[in-house]
Image (cartoon, rainbow, N blue to C red; front, side, top):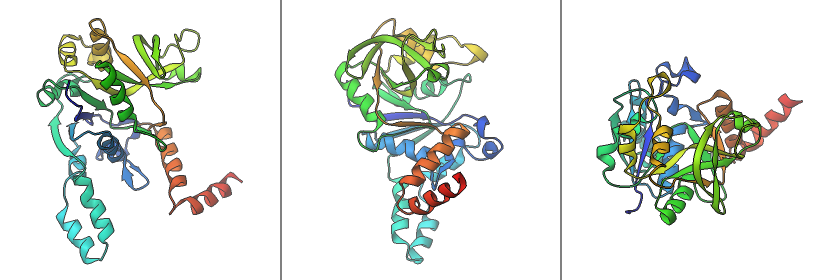
Length: 290
């Protein structure tokens, strides 16, 4: 199969967990300090070798397109102000990748935006990343690159997996499968939030995937589930009846920035890692803790 150069990022959701902030602003544009979450997601993809970013959008998502576009007026103003480094930084956002935008059409659910990208993907393997799932690995390869490495070896779909505790079995889908090598599992099924008593393992499934083009046929044949939604995981399960599905136990720190708590944690952790903020912010945190 060809190298993975395309990534689908669904960004059409309503962001109800952050209302009223997301009434007019995309949840993916919520900042981690001074950079929107979606930019971190795109940067992860680009650092993993992705060249084409396919953003599946909806109403009130224009800000995402504007963010990854050139803003010549702003660039010229920054240049006149002598802020050349900041000007280059702003220009570099648009230069990250080749951006493709399509509008989501079809039933609600996270399988629909993937199916919408069928004609753009063609007959190639590709990545899918959610626009608010932030995964940072400061000491090694990006999450997506770790998945691509496993795919290049096995040539079958690969899901993201993390180690979880008993509480995590109530929050995540839990993988039922067997280890094929260090940090790689072949999946038999995923049990949705079973709780510690019924969990088949302590390996949780997260949202970032390397998929093969036969997922589109699986999606087209998958019936809508709860709430009339088309679920990607249902299509992956149907596909698993025909070919192996793997999970890569990835290294790094996961932030669910679509939740208030996950977003707050990301802001605190990132601030404590920034040279321009660490000292003063640490001092402030010690004051309020006292």
